[in-house]
Length: 443
Image 1 (cartoon, rainbow, N blue to C red):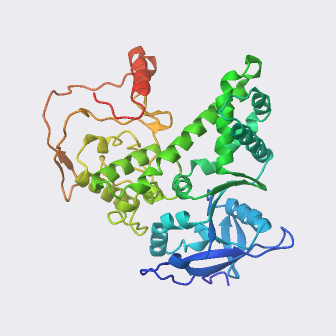
Image 2: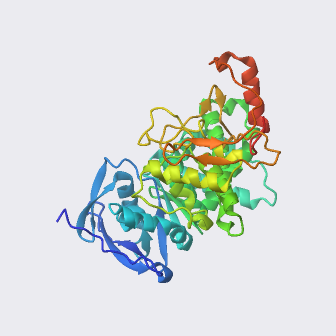
Image 3: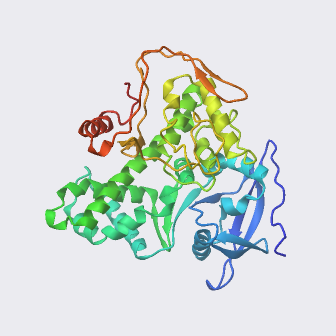
């Protein structure tokens, strides 16, 4: 029975099919979780909700029954299913790990290409932050903060919030550092959702209340008296500010959904920018650093096919070749050689040096200079104010990249100074971070 397959082939034609599930009710949490799959046309699907969550460690799994067949799921997903079973089993639910045959690379690629529609059509997206610990009780506090903010005709700082915030600072830090927020797929899933509900164990909060509550706290922080500002308070305050910037990033990603009237070059340029801004997020499969946000760019789906049979090497090489073909500006090469390590690559040992390695260790700085500021990647583009008609050529066999240019000078030697003790470089780094936060800057 363990070798039985709970999946039947889906129609991938003009009216593609998806699987939805329902969780059987139980009298106690000790009962095994039973999930039943239903095949539906995406064009005529019944109302359903979609789950957004972090997969967790695939080495740690628990058993459920999927269509009556024993099936392993990660501990985090198991906890989510257990909570959802206790809430209601009346609605259909879409969960990628269960509704998509993860062992069928062809089906997986096809279903992932439908995720834009799935998360856009979902009546509600349930965002699972994980099991509740002491930090879960902070959600009612954030709901109260949100209500206080809405009650004011003009948003005003609220000193009363600060005392409560100080007592809950560790819990707030814990919530904002949940693994959920560090997953690359979450950006797309949140940006596409009509409505979002965040769950932490048995506690819940709407997306509006979460953001309003944190915004109310953020606007009140500057009134904090010194006696409140211990280390925990200051760290939590910093996390609140960082989360606010995360929300701003998520909001800016809604715009790519309306790129139908943009040129291919403009769309690819923005896709590159988003990939840089989300580079620090995690993905179980390195290809998902591209596939996980591609759904925000529907006008590019005819150029970039989701193919999990293609190796990460080939995926990143083909994407780099496409951007070279469609965009000759230097900014399209901004991340090369800086954004990712060129040594100790994981699973991408054969990439040319001019292709960003999205499966390599992420680099926060280069030569002592920070590459990030305010959760955004600093872009570099020499001569950005001048017209650029660069000609690129890639040798078909050796994959050597050649480009035309003008020789202005030659580098005769290169040193490796210790930037930490170089006052001028520290000052330059600070200046660059301040003045070039959102735009490419020229040399």
